Length: 388
Image 1 (cartoon, one colour):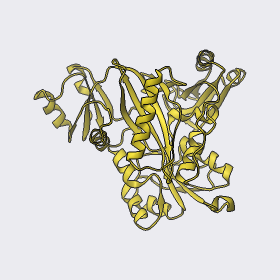
Image 2: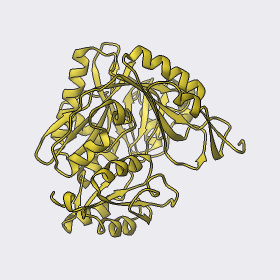
Image 3: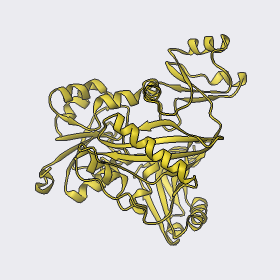
């Protein structure tokens, strides 16, 4: 990859959200030429990319023509036209992670079958082709309450998931082909982000613990290091490394796990890209997840994943009752707190629970970081000039 030195390397990123923006910020340190494909001209990554191309990530022609512009093509979202990526690959274009891996991960049914085939611990499941088939399964006693329904394709950030505890929840059943999982009694939710390059070098970031906002079904706080046992942490790292190796994948893989009431570590799902559970790495780890993704897809030596300081990450979400041009409250007061690092994504319009930014709080102890995080959470509000 001598072209890094000559500054002629062209990196294409499909979708221009905050993940693409933060990836470009890292790429700019190496003077890489960046291209972004997105339908929204005001997307976060579009403002800082070397070149912005307007187009739909699900449209064959948009993705195909965009891919021909880049030396290396990657993505910050799973919802991409796979056929266009396959055609580009067949013509010799470099796409990382590989389209076949993305195709498997796009489909939660294929994901679950992959875990089962390879002996990866995951919750028991069945696959149903329609809403009608799910109701038939309930009537026949194949599906027992409580259970979780996940649409096979298209779901993200809590969308496309329905938790069905009993018959009173049946009105929540989603339409479409889906995976029905036994509901796991969850004690903790954790994530391990692992990277692998073409040489087969693998490095995993420290395991993080995720606390969710039940209303938004989004991460409320992320804690690093996690409070799980050493054995559980080692198990998560081993499983994440095993999965990326089995996939023969190059790039970054975020692996989300449940820890159940028996203390078992169970794979929930994976994402083949930088992830919300890795934002803290920008400040708290020697190598950020975004730099590591670049190192992995360019087949460079992987960077150190050693923890610099304990950290807590909180998402800055749009407030309830506010939709429209965004205004922020509490930023100045939060910046006065030692160790607070604020990231705004540049989205001009806020909506309830929309991810508008994140804050990483660093401290010498996790206890201290958590206290500061609570203060920041109370201070920062995302509102609109006009209430919805």
